[in-house]
Amino acid sequence: MDSPSRSSVIIVGAGVSGISAAKILAENGVEDLVILEASDRIGGRIRKEDFGGVSVELGAGWIAGVGGKESNPVWELANQSDLRTHFSDYSNARYNIYDRSGKIFPSGIAADSYKKAVDSAIQQLRREETIRESIRGCGSDVTRVTEPPSAPKTPIELAIDFILHDFEMAEVEPISTFVDFGEREYLVADERGYEYLLYKMAEDFLCTSEGKILDSRLKLNKVVRELQHSRNGVKVITEDGCIYEANYVVLSVSIGVLQSDLISFRPPLPRWKMEAIETCDVMVYTKIFLKFPHKFWPCGPEKEFFIYAHERRGYYTFWQHMENAFPGSNILVVTLTNGESKRVEAQPDEETLKEAMGVLRVMFGPNIPNATDILVPRWWNNRFQRGSYSNYPIIPNPQLVQNIKAPVGRIFFTGEHTSERFNGYVHGGYLAGIDTGTSLLEEIRKGRKGEIQNHLLEPLLALTGSLTLSTQTEAVSSLHKCDIPTQLYLSGKLGLPEAIL
Image 1: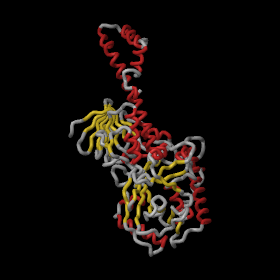
Image 2: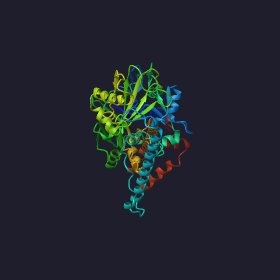
Image 3: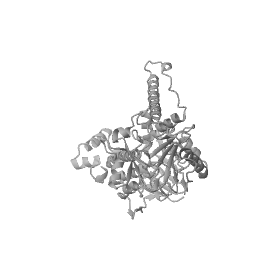
Protein backbone atom coordinates (compact mmCIF):
# COMPACT_ATOMS: atom_id res chain seq x y z
CA MET A 1 0.00 0.00 0.00
CA ASP A 2 1.00 3.59 -0.60
CA SER A 3 2.21 5.61 2.37
CA PRO A 4 -0.66 7.52 3.98
CA SER A 5 -1.18 11.22 3.42
CA ARG A 6 -2.87 13.34 6.10
CA SER A 7 -5.51 16.03 5.64
CA SER A 8 -8.11 17.75 7.78
CA VAL A 9 -11.15 16.33 5.98
CA ILE A 10 -11.75 13.58 3.45
CA ILE A 11 -14.94 13.81 1.42
CA VAL A 12 -16.08 10.54 -0.14
CA GLY A 13 -18.15 11.19 -3.26
CA ALA A 14 -18.19 14.14 -5.67
CA GLY A 15 -21.93 14.43 -6.22
CA VAL A 16 -23.87 17.59 -5.48
CA SER A 17 -23.80 17.05 -1.69
CA GLY A 18 -20.09 16.24 -1.61
CA ILE A 19 -19.18 19.27 -3.72
CA SER A 20 -21.42 21.65 -1.74
CA ALA A 21 -20.00 20.37 1.56
CA ALA A 22 -16.45 20.79 0.27
CA LYS A 23 -17.25 24.31 -0.90
CA ILE A 24 -18.56 25.34 2.52
CA LEU A 25 -15.48 23.91 4.23
CA ALA A 26 -13.03 25.54 1.81
CA GLU A 27 -14.76 28.93 2.03
CA ASN A 28 -14.40 28.80 5.81
CA GLY A 29 -10.69 28.08 5.93
CA VAL A 30 -10.58 24.28 5.70
CA GLU A 31 -8.64 24.09 2.46
CA ASP A 32 -6.69 21.03 3.53
CA LEU A 33 -9.25 18.60 2.21
CA VAL A 34 -9.32 15.67 -0.21
CA ILE A 35 -12.27 14.56 -2.35
CA LEU A 36 -12.27 10.87 -3.28
CA GLU A 37 -14.59 10.04 -6.20
CA ALA A 38 -15.10 6.43 -7.31
CA SER A 39 -15.91 7.22 -10.94
CA ASP A 40 -14.02 9.20 -13.58
CA ARG A 41 -16.20 12.33 -13.25
CA ILE A 42 -17.97 14.54 -10.74
CA GLY A 43 -21.74 14.68 -10.55
CA GLY A 44 -22.84 11.39 -9.01
CA ARG A 45 -26.44 10.79 -10.04
CA ILE A 46 -26.36 13.95 -12.14
CA ARG A 47 -24.97 12.66 -15.41
CA LYS A 48 -25.31 13.67 -19.03
CA GLU A 49 -24.53 11.69 -22.15
CA ASP A 50 -24.52 12.54 -25.83
CA PHE A 51 -27.32 10.67 -27.58
CA GLY A 52 -28.89 11.24 -30.94
CA GLY A 53 -27.07 14.52 -31.43
CA VAL A 54 -28.15 16.12 -28.13
CA SER A 55 -27.10 16.00 -24.48
CA VAL A 56 -29.57 13.96 -22.42
CA GLU A 57 -29.73 13.60 -18.65
CA LEU A 58 -29.50 9.98 -17.51
CA GLY A 59 -30.12 10.74 -13.84
CA ALA A 60 -31.54 13.92 -12.36
CA GLY A 61 -33.20 15.79 -15.21
CA TRP A 62 -35.51 18.38 -13.71
CA ILE A 63 -35.27 21.35 -11.40
CA ALA A 64 -38.38 20.71 -9.32
CA GLY A 65 -39.93 23.39 -7.16
CA VAL A 66 -40.01 26.70 -9.05
CA GLY A 67 -42.41 29.64 -9.01
CA GLY A 68 -43.18 29.87 -5.30
CA LYS A 69 -42.58 32.63 -2.79
CA GLU A 70 -39.25 31.09 -1.75
CA SER A 71 -36.53 30.61 -4.35
CA ASN A 72 -35.13 27.14 -4.97
CA PRO A 73 -31.32 27.42 -4.52
CA VAL A 74 -30.65 25.09 -7.46
CA TRP A 75 -32.90 27.23 -9.67
CA GLU A 76 -30.83 30.24 -8.58
CA LEU A 77 -27.61 28.41 -9.55
CA ALA A 78 -29.14 27.54 -12.92
CA ASN A 79 -30.08 31.16 -13.58
CA GLN A 80 -26.61 32.35 -12.62
CA SER A 81 -25.10 29.90 -15.12
CA ASP A 82 -27.70 30.63 -17.83
CA LEU A 83 -28.57 26.94 -17.88
CA ARG A 84 -31.07 26.21 -20.62
CA THR A 85 -34.30 24.70 -19.26
CA HIS A 86 -37.80 23.97 -20.52
CA PHE A 87 -41.04 24.07 -18.53
CA SER A 88 -42.69 20.65 -18.12
CA ASP A 89 -46.48 20.60 -17.89
CA TYR A 90 -47.63 17.24 -16.53
CA SER A 91 -51.22 18.33 -15.97
CA ASN A 92 -52.51 17.02 -19.30
CA ALA A 93 -50.73 13.66 -19.26
CA ARG A 94 -53.80 12.00 -17.74
CA TYR A 95 -55.78 12.93 -20.87
CA ASN A 96 -53.27 11.23 -23.18
CA ILE A 97 -53.75 7.65 -21.97
CA TYR A 98 -53.68 5.01 -24.70
CA ASP A 99 -55.51 1.70 -24.38
CA ARG A 100 -54.52 -1.68 -25.86
CA SER A 101 -56.26 -0.84 -29.14
CA GLY A 102 -54.28 2.34 -29.65
CA LYS A 103 -57.14 4.67 -28.77
CA ILE A 104 -56.99 7.47 -26.22
CA PHE A 105 -59.37 7.05 -23.30
CA PRO A 106 -62.19 9.65 -23.35
CA SER A 107 -61.35 12.63 -21.15
CA GLY A 108 -64.33 11.95 -18.88
CA ILE A 109 -63.24 8.40 -18.14
CA ALA A 110 -59.66 9.55 -17.58
CA ALA A 111 -60.78 12.33 -15.22
CA ASP A 112 -63.04 9.99 -13.23
CA SER A 113 -60.31 7.35 -12.97
CA TYR A 114 -57.82 9.94 -11.81
CA LYS A 115 -60.20 11.34 -9.16
CA LYS A 116 -60.91 7.81 -7.92
CA ALA A 117 -57.18 7.11 -7.63
CA VAL A 118 -56.53 10.35 -5.74
CA ASP A 119 -59.41 9.68 -3.34
CA SER A 120 -58.14 6.16 -2.77
CA ALA A 121 -54.61 7.41 -2.05
CA ILE A 122 -55.93 9.99 0.42
CA GLN A 123 -58.00 7.30 2.13
CA GLN A 124 -54.92 5.11 2.42
CA LEU A 125 -52.87 7.94 3.92
CA ARG A 126 -55.59 8.64 6.49
CA ARG A 127 -55.80 4.96 7.32
CA GLU A 128 -52.05 4.81 7.93
CA GLU A 129 -52.26 7.94 10.05
CA THR A 130 -54.99 6.30 12.15
CA ILE A 131 -52.86 3.20 12.59
CA ARG A 132 -49.93 5.34 13.68
CA GLU A 133 -52.05 7.18 16.24
CA SER A 134 -53.37 3.85 17.54
CA ILE A 135 -49.87 2.45 17.92
CA ARG A 136 -48.89 5.51 19.92
CA GLY A 137 -51.19 4.21 22.63
CA CYS A 138 -53.93 6.81 22.57
CA GLY A 139 -56.47 4.29 23.78
CA SER A 140 -57.74 3.49 20.30
CA ASP A 141 -58.35 -0.01 19.08
CA VAL A 142 -56.27 -0.86 16.03
CA THR A 143 -58.90 -3.39 14.93
CA ARG A 144 -61.41 -0.58 14.36
CA VAL A 145 -59.26 1.03 11.66
CA THR A 146 -61.12 1.32 8.36
CA GLU A 147 -60.57 -1.26 5.69
CA PRO A 148 -57.90 -0.46 3.09
CA PRO A 149 -59.12 0.98 -0.21
CA SER A 150 -59.50 -1.41 -3.10
CA ALA A 151 -56.35 -1.95 -5.15
CA PRO A 152 -56.25 -0.76 -8.78
CA LYS A 153 -57.20 -3.54 -11.19
CA THR A 154 -57.96 -2.27 -14.69
CA PRO A 155 -55.18 -1.08 -17.04
CA ILE A 156 -56.17 2.58 -16.70
CA GLU A 157 -56.34 2.29 -12.90
CA LEU A 158 -52.90 0.68 -12.85
CA ALA A 159 -51.47 3.38 -15.12
CA ILE A 160 -52.84 6.24 -13.02
CA ASP A 161 -51.73 4.55 -9.81
CA PHE A 162 -48.23 4.33 -11.31
CA ILE A 163 -48.25 8.07 -12.11
CA LEU A 164 -49.44 9.02 -8.64
CA HIS A 165 -47.11 6.86 -6.60
CA ASP A 166 -44.00 6.39 -8.74
CA PHE A 167 -43.80 10.03 -9.81
CA GLU A 168 -45.25 12.83 -7.68
CA MET A 169 -48.08 12.69 -5.16
CA ALA A 170 -48.52 16.46 -5.09
CA GLU A 171 -52.30 16.20 -5.30
CA VAL A 172 -52.42 13.52 -2.61
CA GLU A 173 -49.82 14.45 -0.05
CA PRO A 174 -48.20 17.90 0.31
CA ILE A 175 -44.61 17.70 -0.92
CA SER A 176 -42.24 20.04 0.87
CA THR A 177 -40.46 20.97 -2.36
CA PHE A 178 -43.68 22.25 -3.94
CA VAL A 179 -44.94 23.85 -0.73
CA ASP A 180 -41.70 25.74 -0.16
CA PHE A 181 -40.48 26.53 -3.67
CA GLY A 182 -43.49 26.27 -6.00
CA GLU A 183 -45.08 23.58 -8.14
CA ARG A 184 -43.42 24.25 -11.49
CA GLU A 185 -40.78 21.89 -12.86
CA TYR A 186 -38.18 22.63 -15.52
CA LEU A 187 -36.39 20.08 -17.65
CA VAL A 188 -32.67 20.74 -18.05
CA ALA A 189 -32.00 20.94 -21.78
CA ASP A 190 -28.48 22.35 -21.94
CA GLU A 191 -25.59 20.89 -23.93
CA ARG A 192 -23.31 21.53 -20.95
CA GLY A 193 -25.56 19.33 -18.84
CA TYR A 194 -27.06 19.60 -15.38
CA GLU A 195 -23.58 18.74 -14.07
CA TYR A 196 -22.34 22.14 -15.24
CA LEU A 197 -23.76 23.57 -12.00
CA LEU A 198 -21.39 21.34 -10.03
CA TYR A 199 -18.41 22.47 -12.09
CA LYS A 200 -19.34 26.09 -11.42
CA MET A 201 -19.47 25.36 -7.67
CA ALA A 202 -16.15 23.53 -7.82
CA GLU A 203 -14.50 26.46 -9.63
CA ASP A 204 -14.91 28.55 -6.48
CA PHE A 205 -12.47 26.44 -4.47
CA LEU A 206 -10.68 24.03 -6.84
CA CYS A 207 -8.11 24.90 -9.52
CA THR A 208 -9.68 24.68 -12.97
CA SER A 209 -8.67 25.39 -16.56
CA GLU A 210 -10.86 25.49 -19.68
CA GLY A 211 -13.76 23.82 -17.93
CA LYS A 212 -11.67 21.03 -16.41
CA ILE A 213 -10.79 20.53 -12.76
CA LEU A 214 -7.02 20.17 -12.38
CA ASP A 215 -6.81 20.42 -8.60
CA SER A 216 -4.91 17.53 -6.98
CA ARG A 217 -7.34 17.59 -4.05
CA LEU A 218 -9.97 16.01 -6.32
CA LYS A 219 -8.98 12.40 -6.90
CA LEU A 220 -11.03 10.47 -9.47
CA ASN A 221 -11.27 6.69 -9.87
CA LYS A 222 -10.70 6.24 -6.13
CA VAL A 223 -13.05 3.54 -4.90
CA VAL A 224 -13.27 3.61 -1.12
CA ARG A 225 -13.51 0.06 0.28
CA GLU A 226 -12.62 0.46 3.94
CA LEU A 227 -13.07 3.20 6.52
CA GLN A 228 -11.24 2.86 9.83
CA HIS A 229 -12.28 5.33 12.53
CA SER A 230 -11.30 6.09 16.09
CA ARG A 231 -11.27 8.98 18.54
CA ASN A 232 -8.02 10.20 16.98
CA GLY A 233 -9.05 10.32 13.32
CA VAL A 234 -10.02 8.32 10.26
CA LYS A 235 -8.16 6.19 7.77
CA VAL A 236 -9.63 5.57 4.31
CA ILE A 237 -8.36 2.72 2.14
CA THR A 238 -9.18 2.64 -1.57
CA GLU A 239 -9.44 -0.30 -3.94
CA ASP A 240 -6.11 0.51 -5.57
CA GLY A 241 -4.30 0.25 -2.23
CA CYS A 242 -3.97 3.94 -1.39
CA ILE A 243 -4.36 5.09 2.20
CA TYR A 244 -5.68 8.51 3.17
CA GLU A 245 -5.74 9.79 6.73
CA ALA A 246 -7.69 12.73 8.11
CA ASN A 247 -9.22 14.19 11.22
CA TYR A 248 -12.74 13.76 9.81
CA VAL A 249 -14.53 12.15 6.88
CA VAL A 250 -17.71 13.31 5.13
CA LEU A 251 -19.48 10.35 3.57
CA SER A 252 -21.62 11.59 0.69
CA VAL A 253 -22.34 8.24 -0.94
CA SER A 254 -25.94 7.27 -1.76
CA ILE A 255 -28.24 5.40 0.62
CA GLY A 256 -28.01 2.45 -1.77
CA VAL A 257 -24.24 2.30 -1.35
CA LEU A 258 -24.60 2.52 2.43
CA GLN A 259 -26.93 -0.47 2.27
CA SER A 260 -24.48 -2.42 0.12
CA ASP A 261 -21.16 -3.99 1.11
CA LEU A 262 -18.99 -1.64 -0.98
CA ILE A 263 -17.56 0.15 2.07
CA SER A 264 -16.62 -1.75 5.23
CA PHE A 265 -16.35 0.09 8.53
CA ARG A 266 -13.78 -0.70 11.22
CA PRO A 267 -15.24 -0.81 13.83
CA PRO A 268 -18.71 -1.48 12.38
CA LEU A 269 -21.31 1.28 12.50
CA PRO A 270 -23.51 1.11 15.61
CA ARG A 271 -26.78 -0.78 15.46
CA TRP A 272 -28.98 2.34 15.62
CA LYS A 273 -27.21 3.72 12.56
CA MET A 274 -27.50 0.54 10.50
CA GLU A 275 -31.17 0.10 11.40
CA ALA A 276 -31.91 3.64 10.18
CA ILE A 277 -30.00 3.08 6.94
CA GLU A 278 -31.77 -0.22 6.27
CA THR A 279 -35.20 1.27 6.98
CA CYS A 280 -34.93 3.81 4.15
CA ASP A 281 -36.15 2.56 0.76
CA VAL A 282 -34.13 2.94 -2.43
CA MET A 283 -36.02 3.92 -5.56
CA VAL A 284 -34.80 2.97 -9.02
CA TYR A 285 -35.81 5.38 -11.78
CA THR A 286 -34.81 4.51 -15.34
CA LYS A 287 -35.20 6.85 -18.31
CA ILE A 288 -34.81 4.89 -21.55
CA PHE A 289 -34.02 7.00 -24.62
CA LEU A 290 -35.06 5.97 -28.13
CA LYS A 291 -33.87 7.69 -31.32
CA PHE A 292 -36.01 7.55 -34.48
CA PRO A 293 -35.46 8.59 -38.12
CA HIS A 294 -38.56 10.82 -37.90
CA LYS A 295 -41.33 11.57 -35.43
CA PHE A 296 -44.67 9.77 -35.63
CA TRP A 297 -46.22 10.89 -32.34
CA PRO A 298 -48.43 13.94 -31.65
CA CYS A 299 -46.39 17.07 -30.91
CA GLY A 300 -49.04 19.73 -30.50
CA PRO A 301 -49.91 21.66 -27.36
CA GLU A 302 -50.40 19.54 -24.24
CA LYS A 303 -49.01 16.43 -25.95
CA GLU A 304 -45.49 16.28 -24.50
CA PHE A 305 -46.37 13.45 -22.11
CA PHE A 306 -48.45 10.38 -22.88
CA ILE A 307 -49.32 7.17 -21.07
CA TYR A 308 -49.78 3.53 -21.98
CA ALA A 309 -52.31 1.50 -19.98
CA HIS A 310 -51.16 -2.10 -19.72
CA GLU A 311 -52.33 -5.04 -17.59
CA ARG A 312 -48.93 -5.03 -15.92
CA ARG A 313 -48.33 -2.04 -13.68
CA GLY A 314 -45.43 0.14 -14.82
CA TYR A 315 -44.82 -1.72 -18.09
CA TYR A 316 -43.53 1.09 -20.39
CA THR A 317 -46.20 3.34 -18.93
CA PHE A 318 -44.90 6.92 -18.95
CA TRP A 319 -43.62 8.50 -22.18
CA GLN A 320 -42.25 11.90 -23.16
CA HIS A 321 -41.13 13.30 -26.48
CA MET A 322 -38.11 15.60 -26.57
CA GLU A 323 -39.30 17.89 -29.36
CA ASN A 324 -40.10 20.76 -27.00
CA ALA A 325 -36.69 20.59 -25.35
CA PHE A 326 -34.71 19.62 -28.48
CA PRO A 327 -36.68 20.40 -31.67
CA GLY A 328 -35.91 17.97 -34.46
CA SER A 329 -34.18 15.46 -32.19
CA ASN A 330 -36.76 12.70 -32.88
CA ILE A 331 -36.20 11.22 -29.41
CA LEU A 332 -38.71 9.54 -27.13
CA VAL A 333 -38.13 8.79 -23.45
CA VAL A 334 -39.95 6.11 -21.49
CA THR A 335 -39.59 5.91 -17.71
CA LEU A 336 -39.52 2.68 -15.74
CA THR A 337 -39.18 2.32 -11.99
CA ASN A 338 -38.21 -0.21 -9.31
CA GLY A 339 -39.07 -3.79 -10.31
CA GLU A 340 -39.38 -3.02 -14.02
CA SER A 341 -36.13 -1.05 -13.87
CA LYS A 342 -34.26 -3.95 -12.30
CA ARG A 343 -35.75 -6.38 -14.81
CA VAL A 344 -34.71 -4.27 -17.79
CA GLU A 345 -31.23 -3.64 -16.38
CA ALA A 346 -30.66 -7.39 -16.29
CA GLN A 347 -31.57 -8.02 -19.94
CA PRO A 348 -29.84 -7.05 -23.23
CA ASP A 349 -30.72 -3.67 -24.70
CA GLU A 350 -31.98 -5.45 -27.82
CA GLU A 351 -34.70 -7.11 -25.77
CA THR A 352 -35.65 -3.82 -24.15
CA LEU A 353 -35.84 -2.18 -27.58
CA LYS A 354 -38.11 -4.98 -28.79
CA GLU A 355 -40.45 -4.52 -25.80
CA ALA A 356 -40.58 -0.74 -26.17
CA MET A 357 -41.27 -0.96 -29.90
CA GLY A 358 -44.09 -3.43 -29.21
CA VAL A 359 -45.77 -0.88 -26.93
CA LEU A 360 -45.27 1.98 -29.39
CA ARG A 361 -46.80 -0.07 -32.21
CA VAL A 362 -49.85 -0.70 -30.04
CA MET A 363 -50.24 3.05 -29.51
CA PHE A 364 -49.29 4.36 -32.96
CA GLY A 365 -49.76 1.47 -35.36
CA PRO A 366 -47.64 -1.29 -36.89
CA ASN A 367 -46.07 0.87 -39.59
CA ILE A 368 -44.01 3.17 -37.41
CA PRO A 369 -40.24 3.07 -38.05
CA ASN A 370 -37.81 1.13 -35.91
CA ALA A 371 -35.69 3.06 -33.46
CA THR A 372 -32.16 3.60 -34.73
CA ASP A 373 -30.59 3.73 -31.27
CA ILE A 374 -31.40 3.07 -27.61
CA LEU A 375 -29.80 4.19 -24.35
CA VAL A 376 -30.57 2.30 -21.13
CA PRO A 377 -29.03 3.65 -17.89
CA ARG A 378 -28.29 1.10 -15.19
CA TRP A 379 -28.44 2.86 -11.84
CA TRP A 380 -29.29 -0.25 -9.83
CA ASN A 381 -26.38 -2.33 -11.11
CA ASN A 382 -23.94 0.57 -10.74
CA ARG A 383 -22.05 -0.34 -7.56
CA PHE A 384 -21.24 3.34 -6.98
CA GLN A 385 -24.96 4.29 -6.91
CA ARG A 386 -27.17 1.23 -6.24
CA GLY A 387 -30.36 3.09 -7.07
CA SER A 388 -31.64 6.53 -8.02
CA TYR A 389 -32.84 8.22 -4.83
CA SER A 390 -34.02 7.59 -1.29
CA ASN A 391 -37.62 7.19 -0.23
CA TYR A 392 -38.68 7.44 3.41
CA PRO A 393 -41.63 5.39 4.66
CA ILE A 394 -44.98 7.16 4.21
CA ILE A 395 -45.58 7.16 7.96
CA PRO A 396 -43.11 9.83 9.14
CA ASN A 397 -40.58 9.02 11.80
CA PRO A 398 -38.48 12.05 12.78
CA GLN A 399 -36.05 9.89 14.73
CA LEU A 400 -35.32 7.85 11.61
CA VAL A 401 -34.19 10.96 9.72
CA GLN A 402 -32.09 12.14 12.62
CA ASN A 403 -30.39 8.75 12.92
CA ILE A 404 -29.63 8.62 9.20
CA LYS A 405 -27.92 12.02 9.23
CA ALA A 406 -26.32 11.83 12.69
CA PRO A 407 -22.51 11.57 12.71
CA VAL A 408 -20.76 8.53 14.15
CA GLY A 409 -17.67 9.82 15.91
CA ARG A 410 -15.57 11.49 13.22
CA ILE A 411 -17.72 10.20 10.33
CA PHE A 412 -20.23 12.75 9.02
CA PHE A 413 -23.03 11.68 6.66
CA THR A 414 -24.55 13.76 3.89
CA GLY A 415 -26.60 13.37 0.72
CA GLU A 416 -30.20 13.80 -0.39
CA HIS A 417 -31.15 10.93 1.95
CA THR A 418 -30.15 13.07 4.95
CA SER A 419 -32.53 15.90 3.97
CA GLU A 420 -35.70 15.63 6.03
CA ARG A 421 -37.77 17.94 3.79
CA PHE A 422 -36.20 17.46 0.38
CA ASN A 423 -34.93 13.90 0.17
CA GLY A 424 -34.89 12.58 -3.39
CA TYR A 425 -34.21 15.97 -4.99
CA VAL A 426 -31.08 17.71 -6.26
CA HIS A 427 -31.75 20.70 -4.02
CA GLY A 428 -32.07 18.23 -1.13
CA GLY A 429 -28.55 16.97 -1.80
CA TYR A 430 -27.23 20.50 -2.28
CA LEU A 431 -28.72 21.81 0.98
CA ALA A 432 -27.70 18.65 2.86
CA GLY A 433 -24.09 19.21 1.84
CA ILE A 434 -24.22 22.75 3.16
CA ASP A 435 -25.78 21.59 6.44
CA THR A 436 -23.20 18.83 6.92
CA GLY A 437 -20.32 21.14 6.07
CA THR A 438 -21.61 23.69 8.58
CA SER A 439 -22.00 21.04 11.29
CA LEU A 440 -18.47 19.80 10.68
CA LEU A 441 -17.12 23.34 10.90
CA GLU A 442 -18.71 23.66 14.35
CA GLU A 443 -17.08 20.39 15.39
CA ILE A 444 -13.69 21.55 14.12
CA ARG A 445 -14.04 24.83 16.01
CA LYS A 446 -14.86 23.00 19.23
CA GLY A 447 -11.87 20.72 18.75
CA ARG A 448 -9.47 23.61 18.15
CA LYS A 449 -10.72 25.54 21.15
CA GLY A 450 -10.18 22.45 23.27
CA GLU A 451 -6.66 22.06 21.91
CA ILE A 452 -5.84 25.68 22.72
CA GLN A 453 -7.18 25.41 26.25
CA ASN A 454 -5.25 22.19 26.85
CA HIS A 455 -2.10 23.79 25.47
CA LEU A 456 -2.44 26.75 27.85
CA LEU A 457 -3.19 24.48 30.80
CA GLU A 458 -0.23 22.15 30.27
CA PRO A 459 2.34 24.39 32.06
CA LEU A 460 -0.04 24.75 34.99
CA LEU A 461 -0.79 21.05 35.19
CA ALA A 462 2.95 20.36 35.13
CA LEU A 463 3.15 22.01 38.54
CA THR A 464 1.00 19.30 40.11
CA GLY A 465 4.04 17.94 41.93
CA SER A 466 4.56 21.19 43.84
CA LEU A 467 1.11 22.72 44.05
CA THR A 468 -1.73 21.64 46.26
CA LEU A 469 -5.12 20.90 44.74
CA SER A 470 -6.48 24.18 46.02
CA THR A 471 -3.57 26.07 44.48
CA GLN A 472 -4.13 24.35 41.14
CA THR A 473 -7.80 25.26 41.25
CA GLU A 474 -6.92 28.85 42.00
CA ALA A 475 -4.47 28.95 39.10
CA VAL A 476 -7.00 27.54 36.67
CA SER A 477 -9.74 29.88 37.84
CA SER A 478 -7.40 32.82 37.29
CA LEU A 479 -7.48 32.01 33.58
CA HIS A 480 -11.16 32.94 33.55
CA LYS A 481 -10.23 36.39 34.88
CA CYS A 482 -7.49 37.04 32.33
CA ASP A 483 -7.25 40.11 30.11
CA ILE A 484 -9.36 40.52 26.97
CA PRO A 485 -6.75 39.30 24.42
CA THR A 486 -6.23 36.09 26.40
CA GLN A 487 -10.01 35.57 26.65
CA LEU A 488 -10.29 36.00 22.90
CA TYR A 489 -7.47 33.53 22.37
CA LEU A 490 -9.14 30.99 24.59
CA SER A 491 -12.52 31.46 22.89
CA GLY A 492 -10.98 30.80 19.50
CA LYS A 493 -11.39 34.38 18.23
CA LEU A 494 -7.70 35.17 18.17
CA GLY A 495 -4.86 33.18 16.67
CA LEU A 496 -7.14 31.12 14.33
CA PRO A 497 -7.99 31.83 10.69
CA GLU A 498 -10.83 34.35 10.69
CA ALA A 499 -12.76 32.35 8.11
CA ILE A 500 -13.37 29.37 10.40
CA LEU A 501 -14.63 31.31 13.38
